[in-house]
Length: 190
Length: 194
Image (cartoon, rainbow over all chains, first blue to last red; front, side):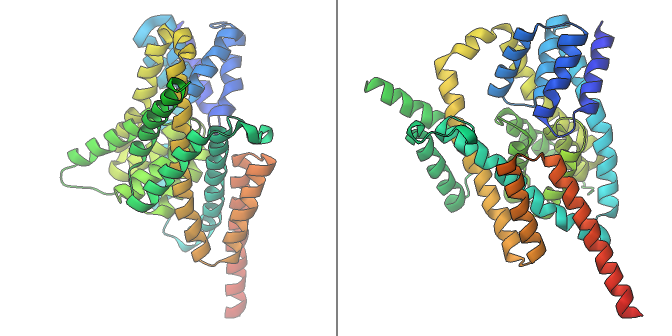
């Protein structure tokens, strides 16, 4: 059983190109449809929890399914299944990258990729900003849903990052603590 | 890849950094790569900004979770296969521990109002960090004053943000443009020689 599970997660690791959300249908196919290790309702609960907690969705589901089946041992085996393909493929790519990256031809090609990566990061950042400030995806933004607490945290955080070069973790954790406190104050004030 | 005399403090820093980043990162691969850029490029000065962008492109185009892919490459950069193992452990342990704990009582977790609010407000902090990184990266692209790259950045942004075109397609197109640019340069060189 644990071997089947390991092989399932190996496939998930190998065929989910492009990050978290690309992996969801694959995980569903392997875990819900093929091996019936979870019901669809449990799976959608897992996706909700995975979105609320840190870490990649495939690792989260590997741990969740593995723990259920055979405790910590199961969790480790399933997670290894997800990680092993990544590990081997990226090790090879890293090896070639560091071997050839100083060639001028390779630099020319990479130079065209870099602005695109900046754009991708910007796009992800803006989506999260609107999700935080308006509690909605960009297509469904309603101005009356504007949250001033989140907006304040964002502006304050960005100011501290740019002016005082504060660390990333400090800003994220700090916004969590201050924001929760502000909401508590609002709740106390009625 | 660099070799240092005593790698222990560096490996410990690598583990600590990937562990903390992984423990505080919500929502998607590009969040963690911007945090990694902030940590490894701006705070620790381990390697350059262009290298981090290359690592991001490779991580996005390889199978598997982006944070794991990026950790493998950064670890390899710092201390070969051992570095990769250390970085991957740092990235994988926090979600494993958190999910193991939560899987026992996840309905309570999901319905706890304080946790919900904390997670919701933390997004504002995450957005601030990403936008901070983006301001640095984009200003460097603009300062380089190459019309092709500025154009690529703007078009790629419009494609992903407004038209929801997948990151994979954008990267592949830019790879094609990069190769075309290379061939064009080679052709020009040959013509001037002849």
